[in-house]
Length: 263
Image (cartoon, rainbow, N blue to C red; front, side, top):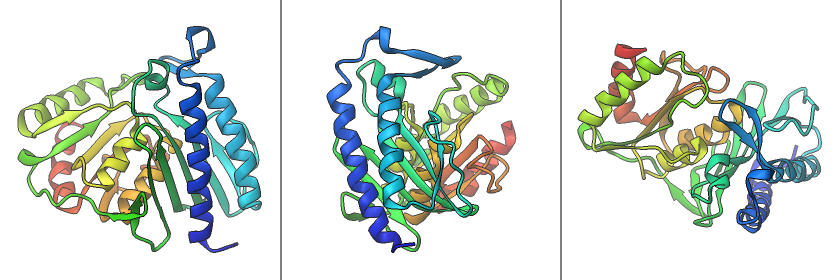
């Protein structure tokens, strides 16, 4: 394969192109364009068109790789490499004309993510990293926060929207966080939540019920920015295990003690 840094920068440019398309279309989408994939899980022609272009472009950038793509545009499976693609993370925000929403693209080699790109077009911000690189925001290196106590931490989360099996435990932890942190934020895009952990805007993020395309790029960027990622048990099954905890290294163990009280 080519150099990962060169591939990453080409994906950065691709993500910007897709972001331009999203911004062009965001005022054109109406309820008649919205389809329901599952309970509170929506898709529009914008998601599908964007993913088709992404798959076609990535196939030219790195032909050997297969795809794990939210809208199922490609069924190609790579022997070693697979792109994990979310053409529009934050579709509900997008439908309602709210920010943020973003493009999220990651490259998986065997079991490991080796490249991640997230582009948020409303603020024209692209977060990215590749194997052994720093994490970047618009060409500037970024790091997770240095906050060391939950009392001073701002935490992002996402509300369960289709899987309510853990709702009671989630609400108990939510209540704890309301009382014992600087605040909670629900932005509506897990990829952006993770990008904001990576650049230190929030100190941590947790959620359950997410898919691999929601977290693949963001979790990798957080790691390259010095953060710690795990599932709710403290293990590494966060990519496909539908549980994720992402904090700076000072807070991760502290927050895991609270997670373990409720889950």
